[in-house]
Each structure stands twice: as structure tokens, then as C-alpha cells.
Image: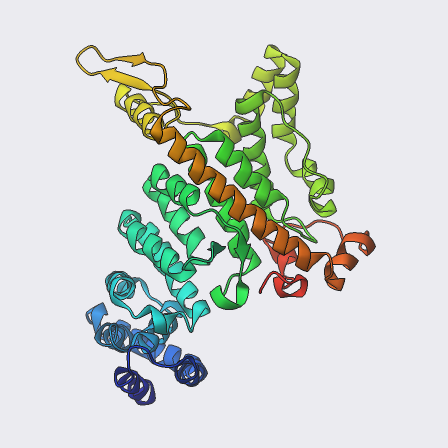
Length: 417
């Protein structure tokens, strides 16, 4: 513990623009002390229990993390990461408060040296905020942290799914959907961000739910399709749940469920239907116009299909306001009468606003096209990618082992550049 605090003190003496090599050296030294730090936290927790409960904020790791947040952020991050691994219920309130302060005041030049530690701290932070009923407090800190960690790379980070999960728990769907719309994902950088395939799965699963909550069906469908088409050797439970929701969203959009794209993994397309029989029965009756059969399917799977409708008129008003703000409809609410008047869209192709919007969309499209071109240029000459595309036709069977089949490194096919 003393050695860790010494490193924290050394970090305080570093300039704000300390070199990458200096920070990497300290990060490596602190990483070696991870097990020792966890033992310190465990010993303190056991002593606290025997003594009848000392104030949780007296945890040496939490107290040290708070003390060194601003000037020795890398040291504080290691302390919080160690504490997160052995966090007790008594220490949760202090951990939440210190992590909130850390995310607001930490030196990002330092903490981005340890992306996996940052991801583990934010994951535990999001979990305990949800369990303590404080998910709304985590929204802005996690959103800001995800943006800072990504920078201008438009890459997915481990903080993205934590933010979206808190949006769902806090029922702030519009905040989550705007975040996804404003910051589209164009790539993954596992080395720079500490991203794993599980983060990828969780991001697009939670993203689909966020879009459903915001009634943005097309966005939800796109998110679930991304979830279902990630290369995989086995079937994940997240993929199964995402497919169920995708079927219902597709019925809302077009009245039918389209087949999965041909580039979806064989292990996914081959085994999905065996896990979604209740939903398949509902879809078949819906598409056939069999009302009696549809009712029977709903009754048979009622426990899985339970949905909460609009409890009050205020809920309907809120949804309409969200759609107006998103530009999906043009309407005006007459509050005294409680009525809604729909108007024609005043934005025409000749308006200045629409012209600016079109120019922005064209620039965005050009940037995306260039990103895709560069990615294609890397992939078509990558021998690992070529082998996967033309030589691997013997994928193993499916299993519900979480995301165990997604353990292959993205670096193998050049996605980590």
C-alpha cells in the first residue's frame, strides 16, 4: 500500500503533459500491485465487519483515490479498480461518490493509459448505481467519459454499453438515442480502448432497447441487426434476446420479419429458431392474418409477451413531444383541450435549414464512404480475413455460453489499427 501511495506522489510531481513512456512505466508498476491492493481492501472489509461497521469512506483505497484524483489520476484509477473487484455493500455509497468525482476531475491524459482499468471501474460504477437506484446520477458522467475516451475516432469503447444500460434503468431513452445518433460507430480499437466482443454485443443490445424506448423503430432494427451479424462461432444469449426483439420491431415497421443477411454467421442463423419458438409462432400467425391463432399464441406465451402500455395521457404527450423534437412529425399540442394538431412540415428543400442539413448529411456520407473504402482496402489483402471468408465452413454448434464464442481478437483481421 505504501508503494502505491509513493507512486501516487510521484505522479503528482509529473507535468500535466507527462510523456507516454513515463506513464506506461508507472502503469506497469501499479498493475503488478493489483492483487496486493485487493488484499488490502479485503482485510479492511473483514476488520470492519468484526468491529461492527466502520464508516465505509474510511476504506484506504477509496480514501487514497479521492485524495489523488486530480493530480495523480492514474494512481487513483488503479486504486478504484482494485476496490471495485472486492467491493462490499457498505462501501458502495462511498465508491459511487468517489467515482463520480473521479470521472469529473481526473486527468484524461493519464487514465487513457489504462483503458481496461477504466472500463472495469465504470462497469462496476454503472452496476452499483443501478442497484442503488441512482442510475440517473451516472448518466452524464458516463456519457462525458465515453466521449473523452473515444476522442474523434468514432470508435466503440467499453463505456458506451455502461452508459446505455444506465439510460435504460433511468428510463432516459431519448438521451441514449441522441447519443447513438450523434456519435455513430465506424470502428473498433481494442488496444486503445480495452474493448472486448462482449462490450460490442452489450452495446448494440442495449442500443436496440434504448431506441425501442424512444419509439425509434428503424434505429432499433439497425442495432439488433448489428448484434446479430457480428462474426461468431457459438450462439450468445444476448443474440437470442436481441433476435426476439428484432422480430417484434420488424412487425411494427413492415408487418413481416425479413431473413437475416447472408453475411450473418452460420452458427447464428442455424440455431436461433430453436430458442425462439414462441416468437416464431406469433410472427407466423401475424403474417398470415390469423387473428384466432395470434390470440392463442399470445396467451400461450403471455409471460414472455407482457408489455406495459401508456398509464396516463401525460405519457402520450411526452412521446409526441419527443417525436416533434426529433423532427419525425410536425404537431402542436393544445393544452387546455388536450388535443393534438398535426401540421405540414415547414422545412422544404429550398429552405436554408434544409440546405444546411443536406450539406451536413453529404459530408457525413462522404466521410463514411472513405472509411469504408480504407477498411475494404485493408481487408481484401489480409490473409486471415480471406481464409475466414472462403475456407471456414465447419463452424461448431451453438451453445448458451454468454459471449464465449466471440473471443477471437479483432486484431487478427486488422480491426485494431
